[in-house]
Image 1 (spheres, rainbow, N blue to C red):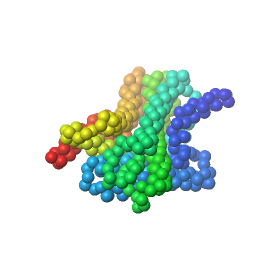
Image 2 (cartoon, rainbow, N blue to C red):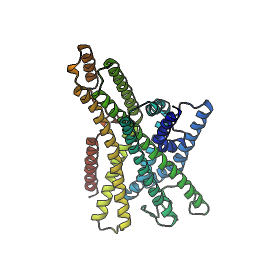
Image 3 (cartoon, one colour):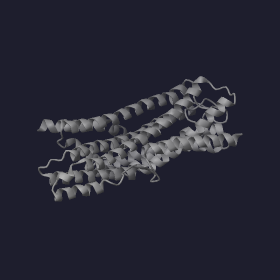
Image 4 (cartoon, one colour):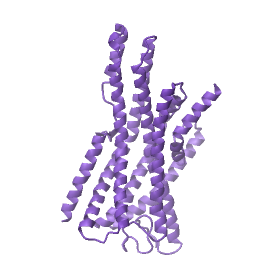
Length: 398
């Protein structure tokens, strides 16, 4: 018995390990067993990370954006860093604000892994958890590559940024920024470079950490909906009323979790989609303008710009795909209730099944700021909107 409980605990640890390591550094991982002193320490870590990014990146980049107002090339180069920094600070603030509410979901996930289950049910949970882990690993790989391009290459005097004498009077920094002191002197330049490197590293970790955590939560709920659908399709006649009651209880529990995820991430999704649309429009305009204007565009910089666009497209597509999977899983619960042979049951039991059909009839989905559903149709509309703004920018320039 102890061995079984240990294995179940190990399964839970395996499922959450990558997400917990990332968020625990800033004290953002939801824990129910923290003492008052540990909560204070976690809050201090969160404030330290937040202000490191705020003062290390946001203020210098915003200062630079104000100074270069009107130069479209420099503004695009600035916004590619300023907007993700703002989005990361928003993610940290929301996760800290909703941390107590998210504890119930983490406890539910831990209980799901510890609850006795069939081999098929365990395999479904492992499959969903493995998908979430794969997404997290890919995100870490992209973070490593981005960190190399942004930090290591500038240290070797090779930058992918649009460098001019206006923004970089001396040696270029990793991020376009402006300071109140002379950064061309040593050791001011070295200390500023290190400060930007640390702040950029923290920004990347929590930008990815929030996204991976969102994927992990939604995919776990999808796995539980898979299991619930299978149970509804194969309800045993013996103790039918009790088994149906347990299905309704599980369905209610999962609906509450979806609502909680929606309340936590809908504003975050709205901010992300807004800045995705802005940067997709700007980068599309920049590539078309440079290619049509006969400018000397190096292959390396063109590859960098195209890779950034692909990254934004894949990122937004991933959000919408996960939202689409959740929507389809909720609909499959409704179809499972209809597929059950409720018409062969006693009137009292069939009436209870009809109540479940009514309860599952309404579509359940995540939203982007409670304005649009987080589905693939929304992704398609995002691409169309960004493309239309590219044409507007080209027309305005002409």
